[in-house]
Length: 220
Image (cartoon, rainbow, N blue to C red; front, side, top):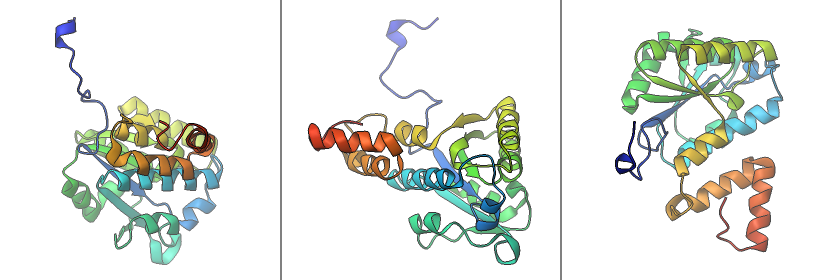
């Protein structure tokens, strides 16, 4: 039993922080989006770019990866590439990114053991590296709204499979706010609220309204 004396004002080990995680974007490419049918594709793009902006805001290391970019799937989502100019994706032939040495080395180079993963399709190119990383002792957080499968069932069953193996399902806004955690952190406050206003839908409009009515420093 934990006593009051043992409680400290520090983040628990399960929380994502800018210093303990990396974000992996797997196969957000045109051909993969063409086959995505688990949800609105525009919403998935929005969530993917929102997640990317969250990672950039907090200087979280990222790994970008594509599969068969030149021969089948096409280039990385342009909106995603724009967030990380000059960051070359790891292109693979394997459906399981974890079976590609360059990809695994890129993940290792981040030095992080908490991996936040999003990609297309959930039931193939997300579930396989997620299960592989879990088996090697990594903690995996799957960003479900920045991922998509060929059908609602395919996406949901893949998420269930990863959860049963120990992965944690999250959303892109959840990741963003978990990294911020305190609106008194002024060094990232403005950037975070900008991301929410641009990609956060009704939540973002709420911030626009609050700042217009209450003032520029209205909390999220």
